[in-house]
Each structure stands twice: as C-alpha cells, then as structure tokens.
Amino acid sequence: MANADITQIDAAGLNRVRDLALIIWPAHYAPLIGADLIPPMVADMYSLNTLGADMRERGHLYWIASVDGKDIGYASAYLKDGRLWIKKLYLLPSVRGMGLGKQLIATIRDHYGRQHPQALYVSDRNETAIAFYKSQGFTVESLEPVQMGPYHFEDYVMVRPGEIALP
Image (cartoon, rainbow, N blue to C red; front, top):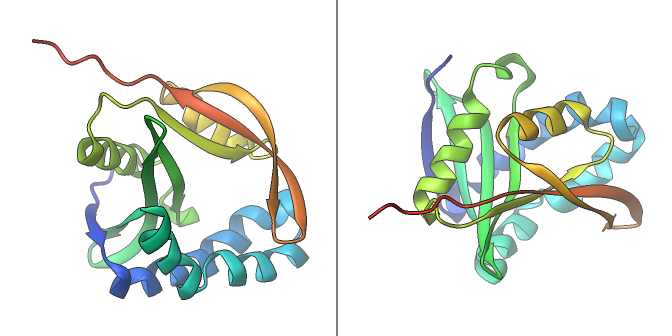
C-alpha cells in the first residue's frame, strides 16, 4: 500500500485537478463510453469555470493526492440533505490498486465527520469502480438517468451508512 500526501486545495489549485482529468478520463472512460465523447465532456466538466462554480455555488471541497511530489489523483465532496456526497474520486491508472482510493475516502470522511452516510454516482458500465466501492461497504441504492451536456447515461447511486459515534 502506497502512502499519499492528501491536501485540500482552494480555487488556485483547481488547474491541478483539470490537468489530472485530462490524463485520467481518456485512459479510463474511452473503453466505457467511447473516445469521441471524452474531450467535450472533460472540457465542460473540468473547465476552471465549472470547477470554481462547484466550489463557490455548490459547496464542493477538493483534495489532491500526491506521491513523491507528483499529483496522482483527486477527489471532491459536499454535504447535501444529510448525506456526504463523494462527487469525484479519480487516480492515475499507474497507481490504482495501491490503497490510495481508500485514503482519499478516509480523508473526506475525516473532514466531514464519519457519522454522515455517504453517497456517490458511478456509471453502471464502470465495473472496476463498482467493485471498488462495494469493497468499501457501498451498496447500490438506485439506477438514475444522468445527463452530461447533450449526453445521456445511467448511473448507480451507491450508499454507505455513517458510523455511529460511541460515547
């Protein structure tokens, strides 16, 4: 298991998230949704304006994971309706399977408090991510239609209960 330095970033660091997305998305999603869809989706979802609006208007917080000074992944999360929503959780292909996704989730949970139930969206085609989230105690709650720009997909909403604080 690798150990990453995980740092919460402000708006000035969002270019690091965008730069990682430009590498991670084509590598991971091309086989799932087609390479032709990736550039416009990433351009829209990972523009600095969109990421900044996530922070300013929707209350998202962002973290960057680094190993030996090199950025290797990112995550974002927010609280809504009593749930801790993990919005983004991505790692470079070269570091997957090293326990870093678990570290990112733990960092998010420690920041917000482990008592909150967690929820996230994951593509119904993303078998690798679904298996990872199941290994972390998430279960499928529902299948939801999702629209990203002009593109329509189906995502699972996966959930995990919060922890009960002991006296």
